[in-house]
Length: 112
Image 1 (cartoon, rainbow, N blue to C red):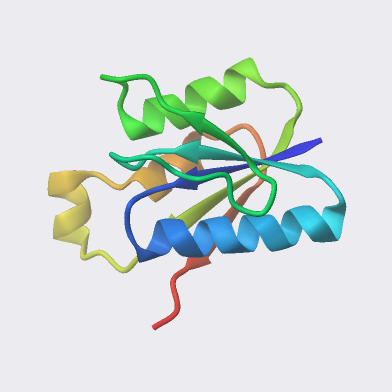
Image 2 (image 1 turned 90 degrees about the vertical axis):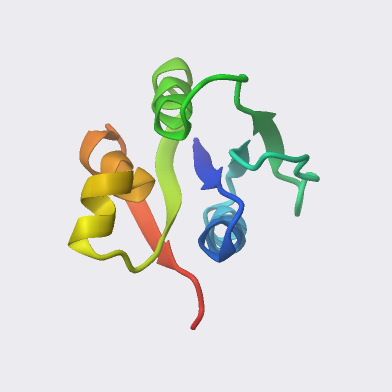
C-alpha cells in the first residue's frame, strides 16, 4: 500500500508532506509525493517524487494519479482557511479532493 501526498507551494503543502512522511513510517509503507509546485521537489525522507504533467490542473493530476495507481490507500492534502466567497471564486483543491477521491483523505492544517 502507498500514501499519496499532494505537495503544493505553500505552508499547507509542506505540512501535508511532513505528516505523510510520519504516517508512512508509522504504517511502514511507501510515500509518493505528487509535486504540484512550479519548481523541483527533492525526494524528502525516502519518498518517491512524481511531477505532474505540464498543463494538467492540480486536482486533475491528483485524481488521475489515484485512478492509475490502485496501490494508494490514503491521500494526504493540506488545507487552509478560506472564506466562502474565496472558495466560490477561486475553487479549492482540498475541497475537491475531499469530495471526489475514492480513498480516505487525511486533511492537514499548517501550524499557525
